[in-house]
Length: 380
Image (tube, rainbow, N blue to C red; front, side):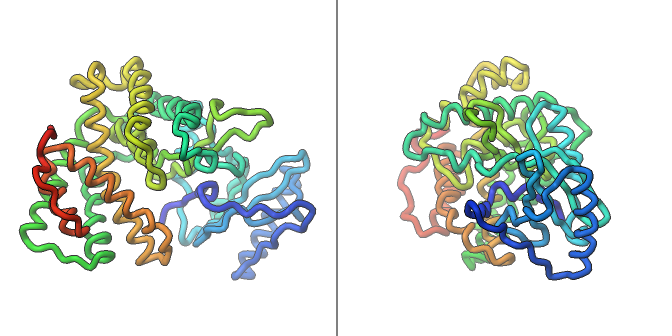
């Protein structure tokens, strides 16, 4: 299994009330508790930790969990507890190094007991970009999104082939297959007939083919406000550099993916004028660097934006399947509450493109929407 080594920041943080004792850390394995105690004492001496301040940092833990501990110099650090029989944290360590070399703000690994699965890291804070979002006033969030695109461009400009695994056809097809396997079959209880199956596979063929074209860069794969941390320095503003988390699944693939992820958020929906506003500003900066030197992407925003839409379509088919799997397999029902957002994204994109008309019709049948007459009108 992969190691979500800093996913704690995207979950509900446990903040003990002022002037109270920290929430105690409990253990189900006495031997692991003893091993951890010895490791923590060694780190306390080396890193000036206040052992008595140890407390949970995340309310969402499975095989791994995150603890916060104070430093004697009035700041905190994060400890990850990840049993190595269930978690492989090597990708996190390696990709953190790549991100840091690219100039991004990521947790610094201060100590890692790889055999036992304990890691001490710098603490990027307790407030994500998502928590500061003003949903009612899109432009109030503009500085944060500009800071996010600056970090994204720095990451992409550092890209080199052969360093990260390829985000290739096999991965793309495996991801979109999550939609019929989990969202349709497991969540909706739908078995597609032969004609419906051919329609879906034909759509998948088109989506994958579109998304395999274009420049390749490092791809974070979950670049969105829940995984971006606001600066914690006193007096800092959102326009300053954001911290980046949850990057352990990074691959080398489509340049369109992360901007699609940022602006077509799995947990947040913006009106299209704001989406276009941020995307075109990213495009302006990216094309000046040479990242978009492909066909007419560097000179025609419309061509680039269409590629972003096709990439977003792939992502939302995948995420719908993942969220169904999280609910049905992993017992986390809160994720499927966002399913209507994904279906809206999928239908909106399919409605724009004539080649996706059959997919739109199929989704409408599955979701029980009244079939739209003349759905191909005005689309490209």
